[in-house]
Length: 108
Image (cartoon, rainbow, N blue to C red; front, side, top):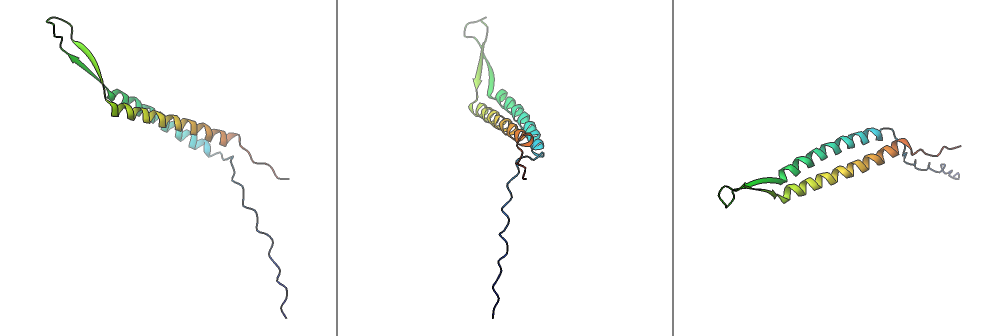
């Protein structure tokens, strides 16, 4: 005769992800450094997008014309880099909040 099989106890519930992880502060610091580099790149690209030009005056003895030509691709790149820097700062703030404030419930 066969003996009744005993079932093993229920498997443990999957662990909840811990939100409070101090290493997130290092991630936030890295993102802030990345944001600074992106802003510097945006400033560099913006300056490349502004091209000063000097044209001679049609009237003899008159002052030359000073113009600024805008290069769209460079200004677009500068805008994109600035937007990425903004997203990096927002995510860095989120990482700091998760590193400092979010604490799990204590089980009794």
